[in-house]
Image (cartoon, rainbow, N blue to C red; front, side, top):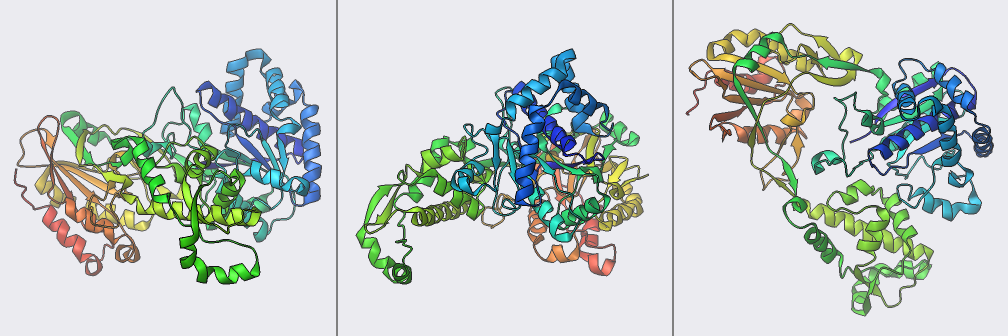
Length: 599
């Protein structure tokens, strides 16, 4: 649900190189989006270390754009490292689209797209209110801002999805304070921009998450990347990586592309047997009935909301809590159309309400659309004494949005979970990205992919356990294999227990076992078993519901399209290879390799 984060390091200390690298990446994304009829205005953020430097850097950037020539473009691309994937792909794109005139065409685009008119400096206090509106509406179609110059004003409480390039212009010596702020800013910029086009469509399940991690040749993966541009300062980058890790982030250059190749022996099993897998889906109610019904439900719940009396006077603020009950008798219904959009935008910012979260059950086109066609049309009840000024309007907007947020939580039954159904198994070679230390070539003939990616030693312990037990498994199963689930959508399942608070929550079991029993004559792998490895602290605490849910799947029989019977099984969490700690798993495993299914 976030962009992949890439680091571009510049050996040349001149700001012009970072300026050019950033605007070329931005232009590439913009033109790529246009090619696929995707609405996107990618934003570039230039970060300085002081207000004075920020103002000076803006002037330098304006001068740089004014004096840009074709030769600068050609020279820049000559010095690009072969490993600079995004910049190299941008050059391929520009040459393919504009051929011999690509450099001249780029210059024309950049001069037109990065005019002073399309720049915003957050340090300009004279335009503070106007700038705040622009900053909070960068995704809107009528907002033309392409470039932001800032120092620290955006480090907290700012949420923008179409930020794709962050450029560090300063050269101050690295410190934890600086790199922590940078990492936090990168984290906000990494929020995913969910794009759509009339040329293709995605299910809701996929719209708000990355789609091209396993399809690196698809040029649209450029729209799923955030690029951080900085001078090649070894100490700064080292400390930035440490700060990123603390924030739970990682630059992609620290990850390695791993090709998951299907084991040769298992190819024979796939070739000679029918294999199905079963999963269920989480469906939004609006997929089951008219969208406007869901929208009306929400508006009905907000309608008639009684707004407390807000005032900025000391007397009123002391009294308002005592007067609320009496005030309700003195309220009059009123629409919200007299409260300007800016207050709702600012309230969203303060409350951390991001547009994707608001919109996950609706189809609003923008924040503006949501405010004007949902909130401002809704009738609520105000005190007859309520005054509407800047301070009060913001408090009212916050109150309404807080209620909207809690109402959305209460309408959790927007999701329904489907029945388990079967699909033909068609999982071949895959591509994933992991830390270099987290993958290993394995010689287990029963492991679906030759290369094993692990997140913990516990997963390696589990594979070693299966290797030790393979003779026992072979006594019961004539054909079998285990697949490591690397976040494959095919194996994501959802809790279908309607009375549980975890209803409609999903997860991806770590391993899936497929097998055919010795007594079965036909070429059909009739068993699918879900297996999850889990540290003892998690097994006892927050993830216990997963084990309980998997238990409900044991023995579930699902009919395939050709009338075969697929039996689902599951095991308790694999916590440790030590029998005393892991006895629950081991007992169930022994039962699994000896059970007789009734079919």
